[in-house]
Image 1 (tube, rainbow over the protein chains, first blue to last red):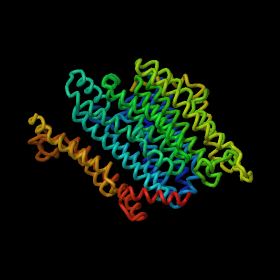
Image 2: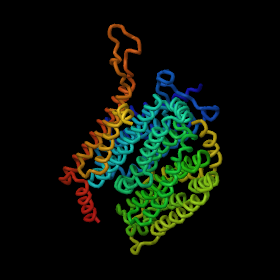
Image 3: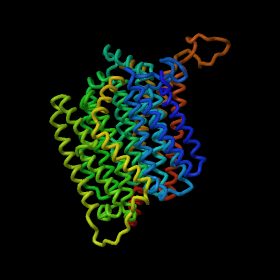
Length: 497
Length: 127
């Protein structure tokens, strides 16, 4: 047994400790601590990933060496390690690239609290990805909610506080439903650890008893997490929230936090309900329809929006629709597509939010489209990063977006006949709509303004953002070009859930 | 039917309370009432969870007089979960109340629609 299996627990504890310590540090020290923590977390999870790949099954990490059904456990498999590593990396890049606009918009004496919150986000993401216990999952879902509300409301104007309270209300409804679902499952089986739950639920399902309560519990959990991650009819908070928050927060909220919930949902589907029960009950069809509707509605709303931050927020709603559509397609290729889309969105959306933040900063903090005319000339790098992110969202070859769309196509052929045609139609419509609203934005950005007296923001005046932006572009190209090996990891790792 | 309802009476009460809390949190326009709805919703979950651990005729799992047979005690796990849950809901309530306070100080109303209207006006003035 390699020492690296201890890393997840160490990192979770380290994140919690550093969030407490950060509240006492001056802001610069807090930022350095946070960045070091995320870099460590990336390195630790990567090491763990490389080790787990050599094993044939998952590792059960017992806390305090209490065996099941009593103890609390983490479960480590290569897919989880890879996602944790990449989530940490995205968090690192969000803070690295977003701290300039952040420091302009938050009072200096409060900036260190921001890093308290992001450290908590890191801790809860790690737990959501690794935990093997449903109730631990619930507790960290709530910690995640509180910390995301923190990074949202730290910019203290009326609009942000209103957006945070709205976000909290939706989140709390989601976690309330989730909690009730978990208690239902506990009532039915008497277990909270995922493998024990799966065993009892399978036995229960085969016996044919308690069919209705089981279905109710599964629906409550799915709907709860769907509300929290912003699936279609529940996506209304998104535009306000992402539009009002500071850019680094929008990047973290859309790129990571909603993805953490979805990853947890996928994990619950595979390792608590089990593929067989979940797909036999038709719940996946509900997620499929809502996902497909989310894609179309999100894209149309994005097309109508004239505030660039809100446009990207609506585009997030569409991208989350993709993930749910993938879950609804099939447990194999569809699920791989969903997981890859989680990654695509986590890598692309933060890059877009940061690029827009820097573009709008160079153009005197404007947010409306018509004011952003020619902004790409004022900040050439951010313009380039935005264009690249838009290409990835549309799904041009060599970017991650292309691979996810390709996988969704494959997933459509893998699923039932009734879903084949609708999936392909939705993919086509959404690609067209994506192209329309991103092309409109890129053209606007590269349209020379009438007066050409402008101050150009050079590369060296925004070093950390340029570094983060280049990293986002490289990771995107890397996964876009060498997608095959990562998809192999997903395919090998999915049966281990 | 009546027998089934009577046997699962606590579940029924919990579901009704949950629904009341849920609807209040979602639809009531008053922010303070929303927070109360949130608490009713959480309490419903804890009521249900506590009832799962209780076994008629047994006592709290604290060893007195050296009795260590598990048959004498109720299941302590749900109580532990409820305690954890209460901590979570207290902190969530605190955050919600502080946000409500902020909004009230700024807009002098608890009606969320009215706050919306004022925020919208503010935004238009900015633009």
